[in-house]
Image 1 (cartoon, rainbow over the protein chains, first blue to last red):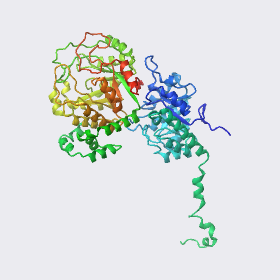
Image 2 (cartoon, rainbow over the protein chains, first blue to last red; image 1 turned 60 degrees about the vertical axis):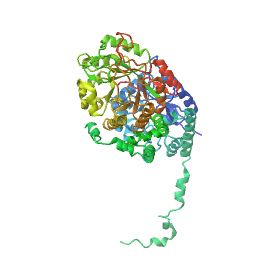
Image 3 (cartoon, chains in turn orange, purple; image 1 turned 180 degrees about the horizontal axis):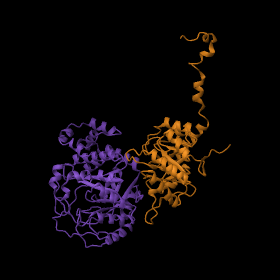
Amino acid sequence: MTKDLLHLGNASFSNRLFTGTGKFAANALIPKMLKASGSQMITVAIRRIDSTARSENILNFIPSDVTLLPNTSGARNAEQAVHIARIAREAGCGDFIKIEVITDMKYLMPDNIETLKATEILSREGFTVLPYILPDLPLAKRLESAGAAAVMPLGAPIGSNRGLETQSLIALLIENCTLPVIVDAGIGRPSHAAAAMEMGAAAVLVNTAIATASDPEAMGRAFDLAVRGGRAAFLAELADQSAAARASSPLTGFLYENPSTLVDSPQG
Amino acid sequence: MSFYTYIEQYHEFDFIKFFSGVTDEAIFRSLAKDTLSSTDFLTLLSPRASEHLEIMAHKAHRLTVQHFGRTIQLFIPLYLSNQCTNQCAYCGFNRNNSIIRNTLSLAQIEEEAVAIAATGMRHVLFLTGESPQHTPISYLTAAAEILKRHFASVSIEIFPLDKADYHLLQQAGVDGMTIFQETYDEQIYRRVHLAGPKMDYRFRLDAPQRGASAGLRAVNIGALLGLSEPRREIFLTGLHGRYLEFTCLDTEVSISLPRFNEAEGNFQPEYRVDNPSFIQFMSALRLFLPRAGITISTRENARFRDRLLYLGATRFSAASSTCVGGYSGSTAQQSQQFEITDNRSVEEVVAAIIANGYQPVFKDWDMIT
């Protein structure tokens, strides 16, 4: 059986749960959570990285076999996002960049227009760009043309734990984009993650729900199981629902029951 | 557009009558909501709601962990000058107080910056009195440029400026501001601000909006609790916070709840906020503004501050000196602006935060220039 891998840029991932470094009670919980969840990609805000000797450098808590996904949190426009991405690269954080441009501090909604601009620039500079967006199909297509490596639509506002409130819009992206669709925000429970994977999301990124759980290690494990379950269901094509719909044809079945009913064509 | 138009709506409002009509059922209804209206907020500020403090505190804790995680952002205040042309009845820097006055030279600011940076602090808040002669905008921008070399984030707590001057400071490296209205009650405001430019209530009220529109990414507001009826003050502080969230969408809004402490001059505040009321106010603010930062200074004592970690606090000042030149010893010992009651060192504050199961965050911002 071929391995079910997710390819992004030059990297491949067998685990489809991406995690984050924010909101933990202690940085020392991060490596434990990574081990328990099997997550191979973790996002970190460049603005949080502090290389001064006095305080903890968050990067020291991320094992070398886990891919770093620096993010541009704090950027208010494309120019700032581009600047932060270049800082990340210079700091040795690799070529991955999650573009987060947020101009709304109340709901933390991404600014799709500035995100597109930053994607265009950073893709040209050879970054593996993962833009965080409101799920908008025309935008996703433009991000595709701009060279994004994936799109990261939100399920619900960041940190809201409300699940897949944008489900039908995400479904459009999954159906119509060639890029991997990674559901990024709002996933509050393992069942939300499973639902996203069942729909055909390529991966999910979960931070708040793991970091703020009483036991982040155990919650990381729970999310790993949910993501695997959802992915397995997607690959198995969830055959039952469509089979049920095909079993009877209340609207068109008559066509094959009694051919004579077709002789009388409709009036007018 | 000004927050003043919102305050005007409450000029005739009978708070006592409203509070006397609050029922337990109304409190539970307000507590059950995800998004609180201003009426819900006021309901939770009622004396009757203090009987349901534990439920409020639990919800405040849950929302804080959800939005901020188990983390606390640390910053350190740095007093540059106690020169002041204002006569504020409650303040140690009141121009009529005969205290040793001093303004740090740029070389002394550098010394203080080095001393503070050695403690590991990465976010600094610099403060002055209001004296255009001693601390003109050119001095403030020069100070910001020096501090920017030593810290990841530089904020100001100074007199209100016009938008152009806020922009100059932003260009010099300032990314946030704190400005307390002191009291939202215009009459009391006039009574306690006896002379000097601070007498202009409206200019101060609109300052956070001007700062935000000039490009500052964070504003911190508050009322000095004790000057006026505190439930009304907290209510208007919360409304001011919500107003700023709406009008300055790209700005992070934080709230302080400074309680009265003794300063020079022996001012006796008319109101005292006890600990249960303080926690009720803080919880109600958290429920009303789930994403707003809540800043707790060293006005509060160590033991109490540590408990506030669980009740909505997101930012602590640490190792605070309210004297000019207080860190490097670069000037003679002087009078404080107010008395601090948490005298712990940065190490001690950090150790206590960790012992309480929280992560002290030294840096969560970098100025992109």
